[in-house]
Length: 504
Image (cartoon, rainbow, N blue to C red; front, top):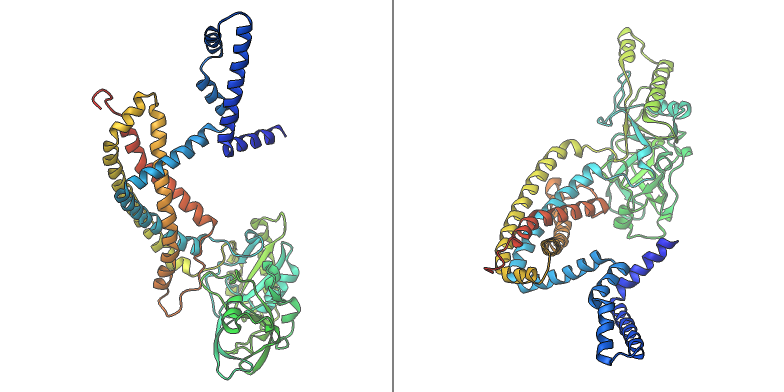
């Protein structure tokens, strides 16, 4: 635990610098007085004794500096001093500071805003338990209903049930109807209908994702094992807030979709939007109710009414390659085992050539990626160029400012300051300026993200996309800010130390 004691000692030194200096000053004074008394007792005159003690003790200032280095963090203390000095220097040049801050805020803010959209569409993990363990059968690029033989994008409900029972690689599986049903339903007790986006899912949907309700319960596996017998719904937190104003008694309310009354049994967590980025259904009901929810699709028991996406959670230690091998064996066995399978020569040849790909589901599904990934990458390059132009302009301003500070810097060098120390101070000043601009940029990006989202949505309601600031976005902003400080601060810092001291 010696390192912990050392760490505590250095932190104490950092926060009690004045007390340490006073104690050290008192200790040095007492030591000198004691030695002086010993010399006087040996027969020296007071003046001679003081001189002898001073010669033997050495440079007191140097010893104090060595004590600071031994007890504290010299680099951190220097950084704090440089930060304070840099902040005062910024206040002494308000015009330059305002221009630089506005340039940095626009450059860093634009980069943060575009990266925020890129992060939301392509990089952000699903708000579920261990999203890296989720995989999708197929590529998830199709929706609708088909009856094609040996299709690897969409699957029937009987196929899903057999895959659920017979696979050896998934701890949990779930099925999702590939389309969201946009209906006009009623909250029982109200006279006017409301638009509702309804998603049909298997009873294992929430358990597979590891999502728990904030109120009530989620769906269960028994909720879709018999057709039309389970009229229950789990509503989203956003819809609960919008339509029920967070009524804690919402479990006593019912909904009417088509001719069927549904009991609300739970409310999903606020961060959970589903598995498809850019879509946020208002409620989820069991797949067994597929014929009861408008527009009343059928095919619940049809072996080849293929309309479902199937996902699974890998068992611990099972790789995606091993899972794919097991799934493909079952895919062939299940299709050949259906009594109504059309085993023509053409279909059998197609089955022999078909392989079911497994796609990672960590970041969810999204049609927005195909639509926006390339434009966002191009925009990212454009705003990076804008930031480089801003850095060049700020570097020119700092070069002009360093000329005005030539006398100050020359005096510091004459007094003994090393070039590296001055460069470090000037880079710290640039970092302070960049951090202030970065903070303004984050504030600007938080507004710009929502404006951009409304612009690309193309409708009255924005795409339900989470563009809030998260840890990845903050790390990106910090990295951009530090890089920006180095870009616009390095050249002025090095140029400022190349002075002709005699002339200056």
